[in-house]
Length: 437
Image 1 (cartoon, rainbow, N blue to C red):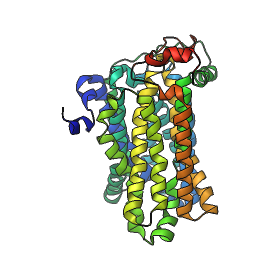
Image 2 (cartoon, rainbow, N blue to C red):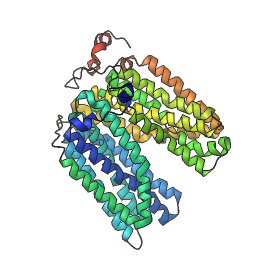
Image 3 (cartoon, one colour):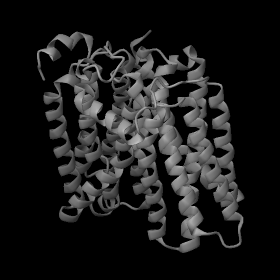
Image 4 (cartoon, helix red, strand yellow):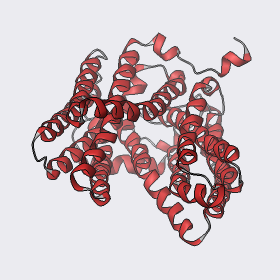
């Protein structure tokens, strides 16, 4: 294989695993349906109320429900058949889409129905996402985890870019009710495809209450040196995840541009993320994947530094694309390291903690960026956010030794009550036992 060929995204998981192909295809179709809802629900809400507060309220209801669903979806994924959990969750979401479609056909659609259906969709989405993350390692060899993460990241980025455009076309040609029913049909196809994945029984038992089971997962994450370090690095990702709220002011005050320039810059992170995914072939072969993950975290604030220091649209686009590239690579490597170091009976709950960080990250990052924007000029705020994030990233790289020394060869214990701190890379197990950090 040429050096250039080695950079291209590794699609071997699709060739080597029939169940993964079905799960991957099902997820792609599911992303289409979810993307339709992302446009249709706010559009209908504003059409009915002419209130941006109501639009925000519906989005908040969905986000809160997804937060809850992500947490308890991990518990369900460790207790019941993971494929069946995904199917039931997506079926519930599909029912919510049908309810939205029927409500939209009424002469006077009800807002409370939209709120309830949005909450159902958020709850179901959280459950299915946590269960899917827990299911993936059962479909592929461990050495394919990074490649699988890259494929998942790519479909997410591409889906985020194209599904809103498809939603706009469907709404313009068929109306909002048709959009909801198309989303429901996509969900039905998703459920059907997951049937071909085959049974995926969870290794856990049901002797614990759901709350106690969740606490067990949190305790494991807090005592396992690698998992704890991954989640700590995730806090930095959350901190720098909200620069987009400053873009309108940055374009207006610094770049002197208009809506066209603003739209171009909003698309830049997705462009960078797609490039990162398409050139991620190396992630499946890198030996020190823990160190690579921490370095990728630092790429995000570095992109913000370039953005904040720029006075030209080209550099601003480059900075935001670098931000998106860093985030995509971090997601890919983080997925691989997380799955390699988590016992199967806890995989759902540990995955749910990552999902919670993903769900809340943009909101928390937006609050941090918005707070800085109240006190500083937009360019200065972005620069300060980037410098602070880059400094913290370098500190994490220096101090999270347990993560930095992770290699692609890992020991994963079969039971979470058997000293989880020992589930560390083979090459560093001796040093971990000596207490080195």
